[in-house]
Length: 356
Image 1 (cartoon, rainbow, N blue to C red):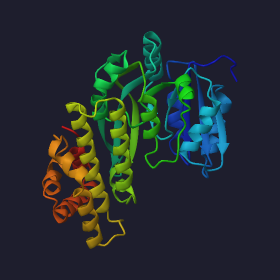
Image 2: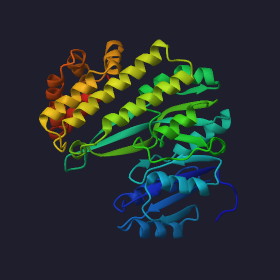
Image 3: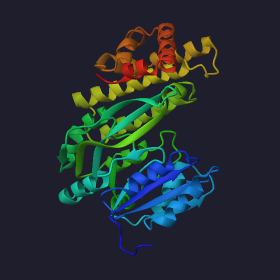
């Protein structure tokens, strides 16, 4: 192992990904920035993932592979954090890939401006069909520096709008700050969101790079539609509480732009919860589905949010009518159409959910 402290520790959990992990690792090894360590945690894989990682580690001293029993991505990342040595930390996924100047550009900005956090744009590659077809969406904000808390907090709603805060893999974290805050991942169904919220809560200096470097491959759009996520509504309610707590802490709960973003985000995710109840895999009867939708759209929180939002996605605009009217049966029928579009015409579905 190289005794010198690397500039960056890249952390990657891996579980049964022998079909794609080589691409994920090689795109990191080919980064223009060479001074990093790559800590990969084989999370109890039962396929060839572990052997492939060991083979790659033998050929590059920057790779360290840890083999654990299956503990989940949260504990895998925590294990790697306990072994990290870099000045900065970057989290990658084993089924995605990154462009070659990503680490260099992000580190350069962090060093030049003494930043606690650097974010960048990213691609969403949504797969569909049997021929490798995909739709690519870009999420980004213009280049910007926020040297003070006040400037960052005032602009944060725009970054939430582009979904720049929810994931790990478009961010370069300062490792000393992670350790000072005692941050680690838990088993929350929201996966990485609590970690990011805790990191940005009192962050001082932030930079944003407009250029998208990371390709998030979000699986097969139509197959994802077939999954029913039990407890999704409760998870979204918890996430909304976290958002409200953050903006209360920032003293911006009454800010018009921030409040509109929070409420629009809530309604967008409420529509997703309605679609989830309409999934073919949902075990509830039709009567039970309509009753659950009635509970969701009839809440004071939903009715307050729907009065203030300016929806951008076509699906959300369509759903406003039954939500405002508290018409659960109409919402159920529209939810079924959304689920149908996702299953049978993913290209149309993606066009309907993208913000305009």
